Image (cartoon, rainbow, N blue to C red):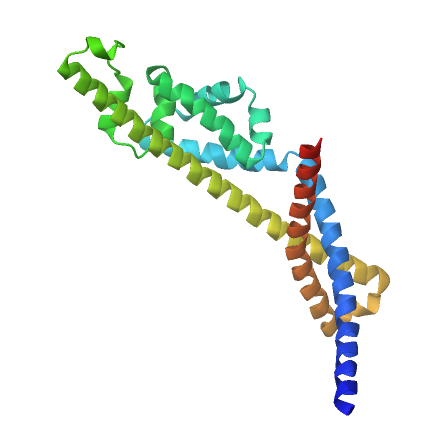
Length: 248
């Protein structure tokens, strides 16, 4: 049964190597997760990040459409959160997009009062559709309309639907872009913080390891893997918090 003993020895060796690595990964990942959570919850980092990207997006479109970006932003924040920009940009990107989407319904209902914002948000829609939306037909009961008036109404409804679709897809693309960039930034910060934790731990508890290339490589591997593990742990904690909130 030598092969059984060989397998057991191999497994024992594997565990002896894997267990310290798993312990280091768990420790670094949890420490990194805690730091990132504190940064996200107690600092305005996310608000600054989302506000910068959102306003850049609006300004680019304003420049292309010849509209005033500052007026459009003021109008949008007023419709979304009664002028409270801080509360708007503090929201998670999904809720931020939801608030902006709610504001766009007012823009679509009263386009002539929010023309600059409409043209910026619906950038890419045809000019003919926008002109049709900005000059709606008078409101009358359908049975009182002539055939030509019904045709005008149909044209208006079709134009509104196309503009609405373009506007919604633009907001979807913005939400995806901001969400993916924030996730990438958190991943990068996770790796950096993990590396810092590893270097501090080696310098404090194993000073000789800092000069060892082999141990430095091992520390780098742990830092990278721990950095990738931290967002997973953070998402797990967020999911558990969500379940607890719904349970209440």
